[in-house]
Each structure stands twice: as C-alpha cells, then as structure tokens.
Image 1 (spheres, helix red, strand yellow):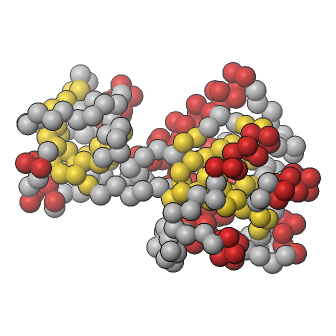
Image 2 (cartoon, rainbow, N blue to C red; image 1 turned 30 degrees about the horizontal axis):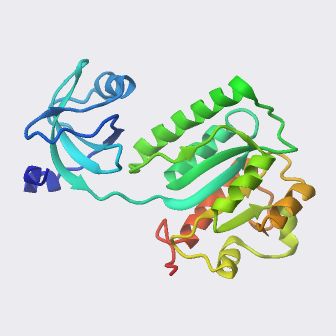
Image 3 (cartoon, helix red, strand yellow; image 1 turned 60 degrees about the horizontal axis):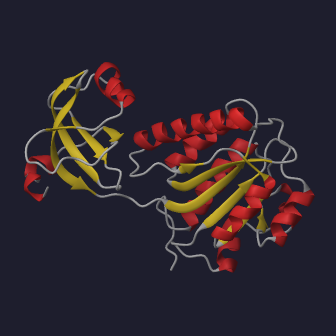
Length: 270
C-alpha cells in the first residue's frame, strides 16, 4: 500500500474511525471497505459521510489507515486508502470493576476505554447488589462490549479492549496470576497512606508491566475479600481522604495508574 501515500493524505484529518471486519484489499485503486452492517448504516445514514470525506479504518491485525471515500451508498463505502497511521498500543492495565446498579458499569467501560486500557473484567462480589448469571450475564457482557467498541471508535483507539462477561470473586483471584502487579482500591487503605504511584514504585513496575486494578461495587469490598486478594499477592491502595463512588473510583484509579505507567503524558518508567 506504499504507493498510495501522497502529500495530500498527510495533510488530511480523519474525524471518524471504523473497525473493519476483514483486511483491506491489496489491489490498487478504490476498494469496498469491509464494514459491519451497523457501521455502514451509521456512516451513511447517521454521519452522512459522502465523497471526499476522510475516515480512519482499523484492520483486524490492528493496522490503522486513513481512507478517502469515493462513493457512499447503503450498499457500501467505496474508498481509496491513503496512508498508514500510527497505532498507539494500549496501556497494559486491566480494570476489575465491581458490578453496580443501573448504567454505572456502562459509564466505567466507556471512560476507561477512552483511557486506553487493555482489558475490563466486571466482578460480582459479596456486596454487589446486582446478581447476574447465565443468559443475563452474557447479555450484560455483550452490552458492555458494544459500549467499549463505540468508545474505542470515538477515542481513535487502534483496538477495542477485551471486556469479559461478569465473573465471580474466584474468577477474579484466578486472573491475578496473569498480572505483574495488582492494586486493590480500598477505603481501609487510607490508614496506610500508600497511593498508586508509591505502590507501583515498590513493585518495580515499568511501562510494559501488566497491572490490575480492583475496585469494589457500592459499599466497597469486604475486609475478607481484601485479605484474600492480599494473600494472592495484591496490594491495597488509597485514593485519598474522600470517599468516591464505585464508578468514580474505577475511572480515577485507572487514570492515575495509566499516568504512572507513562500514558496520558505521564512520567517515564523503565
């Protein structure tokens, strides 16, 4: 696709991003973009993109390209690929978010996707008011994955974070073995005075470390749950002297961790 690079393409800005269902055609000239039916409808009927509009598209491999639309109909978008764009790697943070009532987890998924996390795992804990199992758990997981995909497009990510169906506390404990560092946001940690940055320093975390953040639901985690997490190698941390809502704590802790690992214009580590 190198022959498609032009000075004109380097000066254009793509306002909208789409994740493709198949690789782009290697044939020269305009090609049909392999969009899902939902994305095609959104592009044509909602965004009303037409000839001359420039979009960015992400192949299943993660490669990102800018493309200029030549024709736009309900049958498809015919576009000319312009140039490959830089793809920002996700911050290697996994948020384990306690499932809360209403649309609170939707908000968390949307915002931490914008923060470029690697994965999101909704967790059902002892104090979770919401109880999900079977089809209901699968439906909720599918909804959260749709929220993540929409947020990934809006924030111009090169990938959609992995979002699992809700897991129980034992599922959370089992997942910790895949991480280098796990931090538990807990009100009881106010007494220790240790924050996320200090905890990452003590753990020797660097930019590429896989870090997990655990946040409880309404009412937080129980002391027994925190003790079990600590026995599995996690470290309890504080977000300061004020008490944050579950959904606020999830987003704030993720942002602080991402910054400490070098994202969001943060400091350099290793």
